[in-house]
Image (cartoon, rainbow, N blue to C red; front, side, top):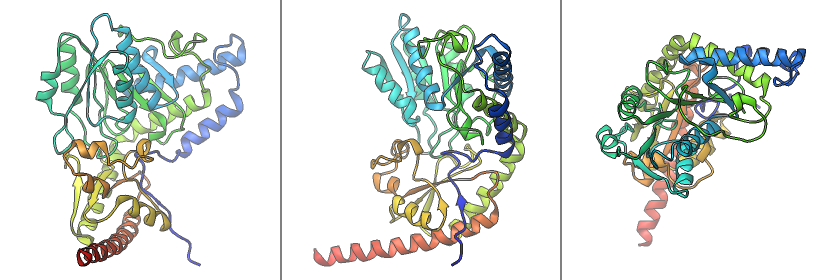
Length: 395
């Protein structure tokens, strides 16, 4: 029996750990076993490794090491940033501004704050997923204390005008936070130069380990501590830090920044090839998101007349792994809130597949995927046509 080829095209959900990261983590697991908060030798070794990892993350985004706080991942970083900043600045106002296409970690945090009496404005986006800047400006009021807009969308890849939004927030004395989980390693960042006050990052989007992330908070920004207990992370987040994971995170972000230009060049080439091939092979499809202002690895495609979930499951049998949208919302039967906010109807939203490529994706992989997607879509459309025809006859 012929072995099924495996092609992983869901790098926006998570990435396979790179060998360089793996080797550094293995060494840390074996040799750096102390508690980084202990004062004796092996504890100091752990603290040294933690400090080196923190410095690498800070360098990658133009921050200071003291402004980097380790977390369990992007979701925690988003929760901490939004809730912590809002609560710490409540005496100044109770209004938060975000966008309609944010990650669930941001949207659900805002909804939780609404129950505490905060007022939240969800700024709409255009049909390409770009925030409506004029609406953002109109949303600002004297009691606005926080603006949180993602750097790049996890479903359609659209990149937001973060620099302009951050400058707008600064001019109005409002704290600006960005969820950069999808963007770090794909876009150049200098948080000081870009006037970013807080930023969420996650290692597993960068070919690093799961379960470790970071929150950058500019010095002077008021934020409540996330967890009570010990005095870890400058007394802002209690709990023993996972040193081997932090070491892996530091290595992963170092590599991502080092190879950013080379990786993006490869990913843009792969995406162009994919879009050319799939548009030639399958009719009645559309690309979602901004045509140029987007992450290099993302192609969100709607296939008219099919259910995205059916496509996903049939491709899974072929060893092809893709997604219908955000991995954090994949258990929901509701259409993508991102696509709906962009003006797509529910039927089109349900017909959408997100292909996100990685640095190991080849043109041979794309050829394999396109041919099998063509077969799957053709089969599903034929079934759909028969069902529609029968329904019409019955009517």
